[in-house]
Length: 150
Ligand code: SF4
Image 1 (cartoon, rainbow, N blue to C red):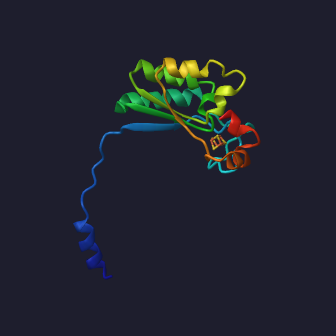
Image 2: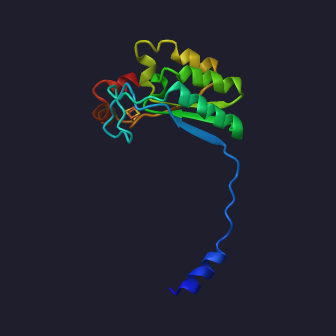
Image 3: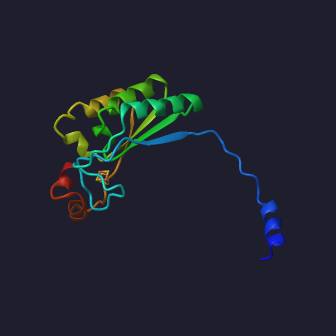
């Protein structure tokens, strides 16, 4: 294609306009109570990377500035970030709808006994993941016995 033809096709391209932001997805860290073989962020119990409170507060500044109505929390297991509950409560206080990308097994972990109640109390929308409907596949990906926990 000659350069002038390329310019013509560029001129025909429709304008792109940015609309308002509806959802901000925030990865709170790579720590997880699972170590699934299919995990695309290689999360696991030995990962140390966690979003700090300073960074989380910056996220809320951004949310406030752009009036973003939905906060989508993911990880790792986002609930393992020490500021997970703070994030939920700050969002709820602003009238923001919160989504928790939950692996469900976190609800059975020691120290998380109150988590389900906390999520329910704050009206958190739980999006749960289960790798497969088959016990064999789930246990292969997440470890023996995990299907029964899920
Ligand atoms: S539960 Fe999710 S975040 Fe955790 S290791 Fe498995 S795929 Fe990764």
